[in-house]
Length: 196
Image (cartoon, rainbow, N blue to C red; front, side, top):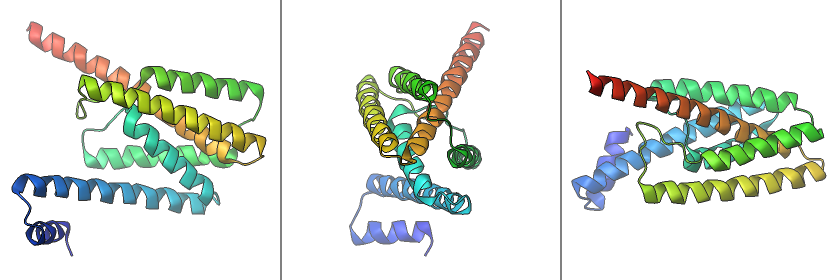
């Protein structure tokens, strides 16, 4: 059954208004994209023989991106390509494992603090109200703190979840910096166009 037929069937059986049907269609589209990302991440994780770590990475990454924001592509195709690149590179880093030395722990703490300070980084195609900014900021802070607690416990117990959580935090930080850099270029371009 196609997506549009599914939406129409649900809308008709529940007597939904046009506005509710649009919301339903959007929700189904986002759910499908989320499932695609999960399947892709788990498949790459299986190929790299780190399936459990790929699930931890994806879960951590999705939570942080949902509220922390960062770079967003203009088109769905570009989004899928960028997402695949970030996922593959992150999973390769997880597989190789980084040092559990004091300096790598310090770097993760610094990057975590930076993510908490920067959040949320909104994109041109995902603007936030002032209330949403405050809520997303505190949700990001909470998620980063919880993820770091889990990473520390994982490290103490000798589990490799530390690498997956660290990779998710690093990836989100990089996407935040890209989003800030891009937003700055967009704002400069808008100001230049207004000046003409």
